[in-house]
Length: 320
Image (cartoon, rainbow, N blue to C red):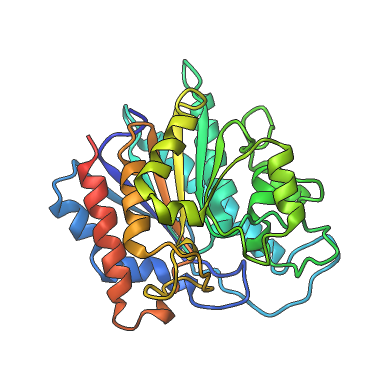
């Protein structure tokens, strides 16, 4: 098993990677709806809390240079703090690592998380292979050098994970121990991708298909969530030893669940995405879950946040 039933929660209050404020409030929103007490009440062996940042990393309106990103320094600083925190979480585990639950905040902290996972996996007496299930409506493959780039760091997330041409040089520190990118076609699945989203450009899909990436569309997830999840796990089964699941809540259709920072009409209802996530988290290879792009400003009373929290707690409690 990739992780024990104990849970290590890392809070990352940041919204510096995009242009709409609010995501930095998400970690506190999860705490306000009682995620810690719910996990403890679920009889998990232990639940620990870790704060990656000394203070929320918030967006500020600014310009950017060609080939760069808005708020580049603070975004990279957040990633450095996140990698350090997750690495320390692993070091504090006596034997089997705790399940890493990372609550953002921004999706663009993911290179740091996977870098920490890879470096821990590489340090074992028998090195392990790390994989990623990227649940996101967006491909996030905008290169900083793309002439149409708006400088939005979050939209470059996967560009940094696979290290596309033009990726920010300073993001190269978030890598495998060998210096290689943390993601490639052998260890990554795009899950819930909105194929009709204008931001997912033809050149993005060309890159994915030319390089043999597995892409599971949002339409196919909506049609049969459990089967798509099982197929995803089967694809990764012989390729990786540890799986990180990244849930960007914009993969959930906002028609009845408008919790995401930016709405994305994917056709995947909340309950359907939870059905898929339940199958994924049931895999013994899954060692962590990242939840990103939750904006509590869209959730007066935190009813949606509480609903999401209850599902996550139930899934983690069911892990064997």
